Amino acid sequence: MRQLTHTLLDGRQPPRTRRELFRLAARASGLLGYMAVNTGDVVLSEAYCVEARDLSGEIRDLDTELWACGTLSFGLYHSGRYGQADACAAAAVERAPSHAQAIRLLSNGRARALAKTGDRRAVEQVIEQALGLSDLHEASTGLTSCISFEPYGRARTLANAVTPHVALRDTTQVLRDAEHIDDLVEHSTSSWSRALVRLDVATTLLQQRTPDIDHAMTLSREALRLCANTPISSVYQCSRDLLEQAEPWRDHSAVRDYGHEFRAWSQQPWLWRHPRRRRHRCRRTPGYCKAEGVRRVPLLSADPAAFPADPPADTRNPAVTAAHDWAAFRALDEMTNHWARPGWPDGIRAYYWMLTFPHDQPLAALARHCQDQLAPLGLDPVPTDGLHITLARIGSPDAIAPKQLDNLTRDVEALVPSAFAVRAMPLAGSRGAVRLSLGPWEPLLQLHYALAKTGSNAGLAPKKPTSAFRPHLSLAYNNRQRPAAPVVDAVSELRMLPAVELSVAAVQLVELRREGRTYRWGVQKNILLR
Figure 1 (cartoon, rainbow, N blue to C red):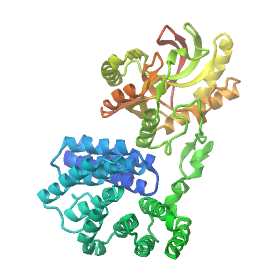
Figure 2: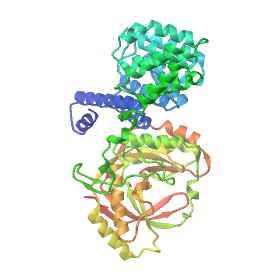
Figure 3: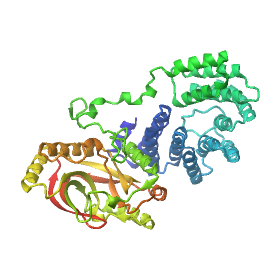
Figure 4: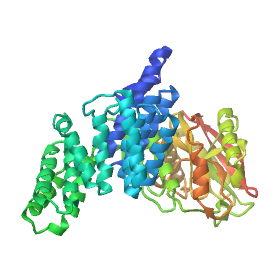
């Protein structure tokens, strides 16, 4: 569905039809994001959710946009980032406090994250707010599906409220709420919901002053059996946590039996535990793949000198690469001085392969806006006529004869791939710069591979192989050692700006030079792509 809608969106349709395609594409990405959490791939989930949020934002579909924010919070929660999960949900609620989707944001997003921080008072406040909205919107009285785009009814809100009360060890409230929705849970078509409520109640039975071990283990084994054929990450995590909580009674026969069943259950070769098996390996080796009809590129590999050090999960999906860039930048504690790099003093010159955009007005306008907003940080902005994508270093002018350059460019002309386009946005950063994410990476990787292969054949192999290439477009360079948090916070405010599409019809061989705290160059050769 997602691929189909994206293919259709490349064409032309009447405005009403196009709006509906945007909505379908956003919801398809949202559902994929939700399921990615339940396969344990939180990074992929974040990418899908950002895509869903951006697509729905384009058509002002607030319902889907808030749902995507709720799923983004859900993924952050399951990755242990409770503060960020709460902040994500709270920001969405603030946009539309009375919207029906705020019920899910409050009960599924805020309440559970706040409970992990121990803020009991805040938990009660948001649950009360969620229940009030459930009554206000007269949502379904049944246990609505956790994956539905429909607003949460009171039963679903209470089912979600059970989990934060478990975390707060409020056993009386958990058992009361569970009893209240017991009939609805048992008649639910969702085996996941029935399993998760059982696990919450089982955990509470162990938390009581007088633990009911036998009943807790019975419920836990029922939960495993309910999801025997459709396991999800959240059931696995809750089941594992319950076994750890039952450790004081490890010699009890019911605990031993549950432990044996859980270990057998968790060791099955489920696809959700190995999501990468579904990817086509042939996309990751050099050459040409007849089955896929595309030129294959080398497998990207981890490189501590690159940023991000690890490659993204999918180089063809701009949402995945953007989320991967952002996660790496957001994880930084400190930023370094870009200009303090060894071997690159003021005045140095070198030949590089680059993509330059001296006449791209939309890109220049985006750069100026971001640079103006970031000005209080004192970064060194890249001149708008100096915006570029660095591909590969060729070597020093002192070490390369003009004939070598002529031979190199002649060989490159024979191997370059077709012209392509990439999206620049959203904003992210690295250890030494604020920069735009690019996507998809695939055509950039193919171009880099062609340049690297040609350079190697000519005795001018690039310093970095394609496996360490991380495409980006810098807007400003950091000029001192500083904590990363203020820069990350400032950048986060600019991530929702519209993307700019960059047309790449040629690659430039330039003589790059450093002039103080900026880069300038002269184009030696402009090679048109096919």
